[in-house]
Image: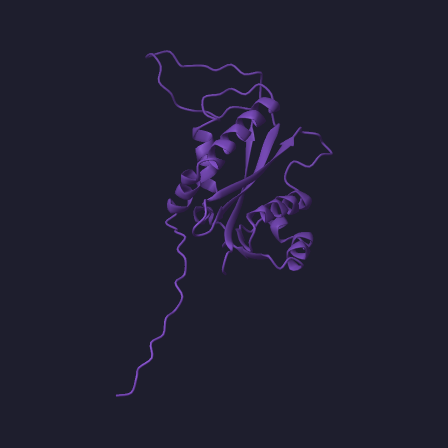
Length: 201
């Protein structure tokens, strides 16, 4: 596919409740970080990593805040996914999208959306194959970067750090490339086949 992009998608979530972690301390003195209490308020993130030979790799993402409203949706909706894919049109070429088998990814509305867009082709990863998706590397970079060693006080505080961390990755294409190579994958342009003609003696 000439001028096309390989785009991989994945989702993750972060809570303002800090995770358990190991650290150093004086012997016999367990370090304690005091927080206001457990909270189920989360920030969901969906991201696309985009690769094509000869161009800088790209990261496109959308965060979604969950305020724990009983009637509110906690995860991304079909409309959210459609908006994310529409944002990928900024790449300026046809897209081959690779994503996991999440039920909403195969919902009728998503299939109908893809069917009428000739610039979009979708493939699905095998079930239970997170090791095949390079986007997960961005979540690792985020956890070890902007989200590390911070006790978040509000969802806004968490959102601020998530967006700053992802912008940091966006402007460093070598980090996005590293997520791909860590999975043992590379992007190599296909060389056109050549033919030779044998002249009769």
